[in-house]
Image (cartoon, rainbow, N blue to C red; front, top):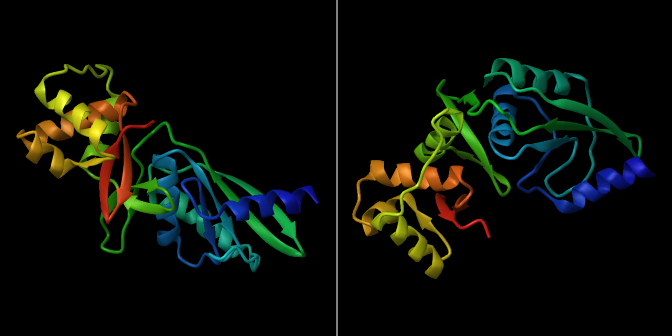
Length: 211
């Protein structure tokens, strides 16, 4: 009962920031995108053998696990490490793939166009990482650290977010009347220090206060 209850509790949560359902895995390249997105963000899990509506169909063959292995080893750069757990629910096997948040970001995956790109997890979607996130990862690896000087653009950003829920990169550099490069630098600094977090709305990445 504990096993059934554990999986059922996860299914009730639905697909979210930390969880994705997969009915079947038959393409290593496609599953690599989910692995990369979880590793590049907060970590998460794949539940294989579960439909999007939460119905348990079960994993049919061990080949599906080998597809995940191939995705992590061949189509993720650098390779992504994960844990596997098998659960039997009503005589059906559910495969739980647990992906921890990586300490070696960014991880890239090969797209259909043979480009190597980074993705992040935002709510229940895997989103292409933009230039701001690439700067965030670069700065987190740097030994120089991050320092914020509260000049006019920084103060504008704080004031804007006190009155609005979120702001985009374009909105920021247009309304603050600064270069795109400087806006990227400021936003990435704020994210590194935990003062902003990215959200995905209307097919765009926005930035908001974490509280």
